[in-house]
Image 1 (cartoon, rainbow, N blue to C red):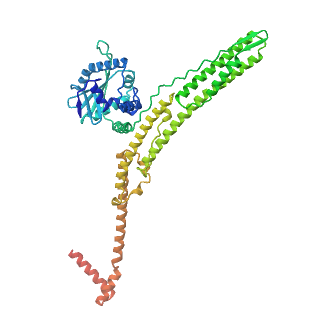
Image 2 (cartoon, rainbow, N blue to C red):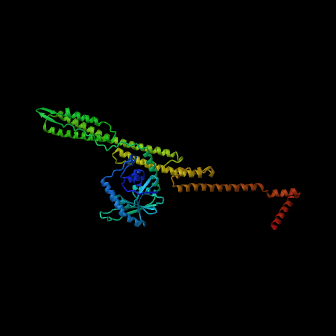
Length: 492
């Protein structure tokens, strides 16, 4: 670990952060920060842009530093040691510690107390994810740091503590650590291949020229109006423009503005119709024109509104399907490395991630984040399966007896934790070996009995053998054998 003497917001401090991956940016890199998107972070790093801080934000930062300094003595009482603010790095990773003890074994991270943190502590929930990833990276830099004290406090303008400070120890989470390492690796790749895109501000509808006002005048029995000559051509031209299929966020904004304008025409026609009917009696043609124009505007507005809704839905669905296909391809490629095991992994909830979102660009970025996280989970699962297969293949290899036939359910047991998986495999192999050993013992005993039965002569055969060899009768030979056996018994 290398420590750095830096003062916040100095050129040296900004330069350091531009060439390192700080823990405070970890959440943005993972796409879980409420303050900055991953694309914004990538854009800043690629172009070397320093994030601008307005006066209100700077005031919050200054107040946060004041709260941190006031809370540090409280943390020292809990830890039992003095804390020293430190900026440190290990390779490209860096972290600014609100405090480290002298041997770097424990650290301190302070946050301003807010409603979210209160809810977490009140419900005994895990610390917020974007806080946990920051502290996990802090644990990765010192060689022997094993815990970070998380504390949240609130102070008044007189430096008096408001309420009770909330605190909890954070210890390392291996899954989060792997996620961070994988995330910064991918971020570095994306940074190397980054192609700056033109900044496109949020679309603002193109101004639509006001349509001519509908006028009419009754001169005796003759009705004079500009409905057909001035108003209708303008409205019909607007209707034709509204038929264009929206492609971009700008198109959607423009079409939405046109639909609102057409709704105004529809409403205006109704108003003028009512006024005319109240003033003149022979207005049949005029009223038909008004009704026709109002109906045209109404239908065009409905068509435009449906087009906006339908096209946004189509594009949203296209984003979801593209992400699902990319995820399926990634999993398929991983399964080539885990054969014969198929990866059983939940498809990320892309639809749920963008629920309620209006802007296509925001949907796209959120889906990209969910896809990245899903790929990371798939990578972690594949890594776990590969480790199990290496051990399993060794246990069931030719040298060890070819026990693969004992595991027709290898797919099912592969989801067990590694130690449970090993226990299942070894238990079956040992049980099989025991059964085979008992079977072999039975076979050997049976064969030995058969061999003994085949080589030992019967009593009759033994007596006949003695009678023939000594030229005596059967009874004499029998008596000799009995007497000999008795003498041997007595002698023994």
